[in-house]
Length: 323
Image 1 (cartoon, rainbow, N blue to C red):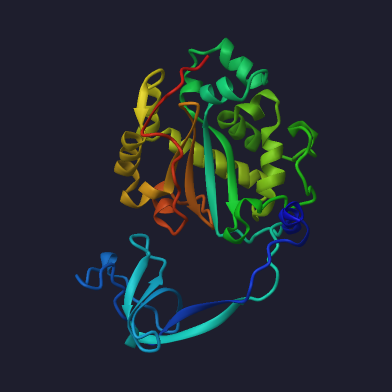
Image 2 (image 1 turned 30 degrees about the horizontal axis):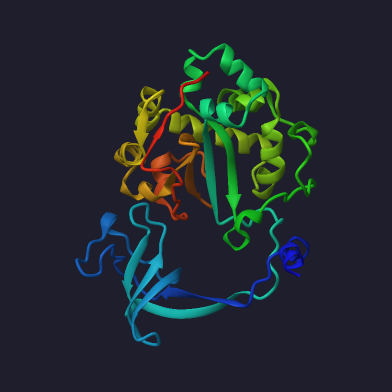
């Protein structure tokens, strides 16, 4: 019976009970405070009359609150407080039907997963052509950058089951068994720079597209070009330069996180996580918003609402030397 219950969501999707959400509809232009006690309002953000804001929290009597915390489009501290008298609370039915986990465009966030290639090859990639290439050229600076594992659209109601939203509905026996992806030469070139598997022909990009990429609304070209752009921006950061200088040495999550937040702002501290296996750093992940905009830098994307991430690394770990 337990085994059957585990399988059941695979056949019927994730079932959700009716969910209600509150919105706050502004009646006038009012300050949106970062701190309602100190009355701080970075960038002087105001409510727009008639606009509805998702409600995060009420302060005071639930029926007649004094303050309402809402989600705004502000780049600095998007979660803001507004005086309840500035507008009206409305309640809406959000969902009352089963929620499927294979419908494209329903993501509520993204994760950018980046590998430290030396540790990946050491632990998981024996025999892969890109790892053979690494062993032959261990001194290449290419292996002292993070490489693209994947850009994953996520849907919180589905957990880790959101995927395969296109014509392919299950994982292939081997990555090269997936259908081909029509990519322009420009996209192929940019992808090869950041994903060694795509460059050396072991087909990770096919798995990433059919499982993850198919669940967002960019075409394959734009999806991989954006994933490559984000990877390159991270590789230009002070954190990755520090990581490269630490090759073959012990490093700490605290030091790397501090280097990251010094460059991208305090709000980015919980948008990055460090993942280890057998004492080696294997992957770094970033939490990004539901909508990606190629015109925005990482500091703006990391300032927008997205889930917090947690490390699985110990306080310190070894940064593997390539080869």
